[in-house]
Amino acid sequence: MDKTLYEFLIFGKVQGVGYRRFIKSKVEQINLQGVLIEGSIKNLKDGSVRVIARGDEESIQTLRRYLEVGPIRSSITQIQSRIIGEDECKEHTFNLDGFNVIE
Image 1 (tube, one colour):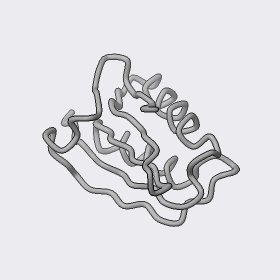
Image 2: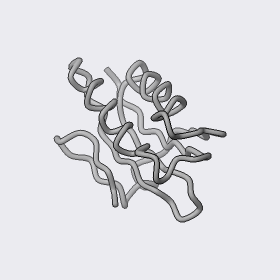
Image 3: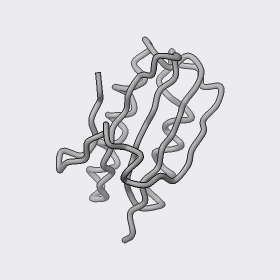
């Protein structure tokens, strides 16, 4: 299966509410189904969250649904997404461990 690299920017009440941990746990659930999503999630200075994820189309769409829901204390107002190239995500690491939270 072809894997595509996506960037998601999530806006709203997404910091200080367990959003990154929630998304990491959901990615781990997806990965347990045998489809690997690689990438990372990071809080940004403007209060938003950035997700870089590489996977097949079906797993990325599943991830997007989790991004839209978030944990109970979160409130998502907007999600921007786009396909990006490897050169646009140098600060994000991809490895066999799957998905990383960047502090």
